[in-house]
Amino acid sequence: MARCGVDVTLLLVALYALLPAITDADLQEGFYKSNTNCSVNVEATVASVVQQYISADRGVGAGLIRLHFHDCFVKGCDASVLIDPNPVNPDPEKGSPSNGGLRGLEVIHDAKRRLEGACPGTVSCADILAFAARDASNVLSAGAINYGVPAGRRDGLASAAPDATGSLPPPFARLDRLTELFAAKGLTQDELVTLSGAHSVGRAHCGSFAQRIRPNVSGTMDAEYGAGLQRRCPADAGDGVAVDQDQATPADLDNRYYGNVLAGRVLFDSDWALISDNATRRMVEDNAADQARWAAKFIDAMRKMGALDVLTGDQGEIRRLCNVTNSG
Ligand code: HEM
Image 1 (cartoon, helix red, strand yellow):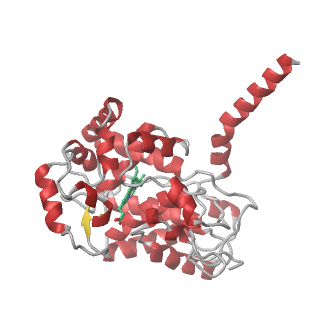
Image 2 (cartoon, helix red, strand yellow):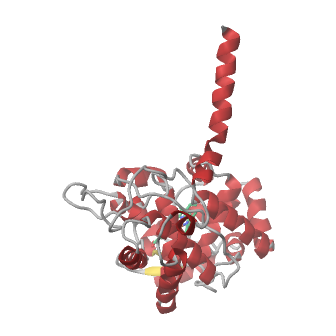
């Protein structure tokens, strides 16, 4: 009897270990070509919309990469981040402080409008978001970061602000908390360090790092860099004031972030935290030293993140509009 109990436990452990692989296998590259009668090229349509918006404002590309991260970390990659408040659900994920400053949503809505016109009820908002994050990474890295996106995600039916607040790392998080939040999603410390490289593009609002520059510049920040931030973020700066994350090349997705981390020229405690421990400091140094290796790891980590807790088959739904579930 005891023997049987042990065997069952071992079997369960073995099955559990297989779970991420099963989730991955449910998604498929070229999903819309192989499984639907959609007459338009879905991925090319998304790519052209993304390109169009990035041509007008490269910052939108950074917004799309962050949007995918914020989608996948909260209830999986199910487009729950896109839901607007309404009388039935007045406090969706968007209302969480962790989702402050999100941008690029209009790109997803525009791509959805075009795809819905050509192939109604076929392409999920979650897939559009995953494609768009890939396309944005590709454009902002000048082609260095490009990868196939396994698709077939379905859209979620629920979206609640407390879920976002509990799952997304705040900018003041230290290494143990960051490690814990990433591990909760099956991501390693190396993947945490690798994905944080996305902070080589885009912006941050002054409020998200105010405590590192006032009343004094933090001892973990380069003094001259901190003084520059104090000038750009005056004490009475309104909510709308933002600065570039990488002051040298704010619109290029590259490994420059790691040089910035080592130089103390990064905005958040969570950025600095990556060198607060010997093991992760070595990862930062490795990424700083080898752009191509970091880019390859970034691709792997984005694909892994893009498969988190996905809904497939007949789970969830294909939304008609990305900001509202089909039942309103
Ligand atoms: C490790 C923990 C992380 C923390 C604490 C964090 C926090 C933040 C914060 C506070 C901002 C500024 C938002 C604003 O003020 O507008 C930001 C921006 C950004 N984050 Fe993160 N982030 C983390 C990881 C990631 C990851 C894993 C990715 C993507 C793979 C990512 C991509 C971005 C991008 C691209 C921006 C710029 C967005 C824009 O310009 O609109 N971040 N992050």
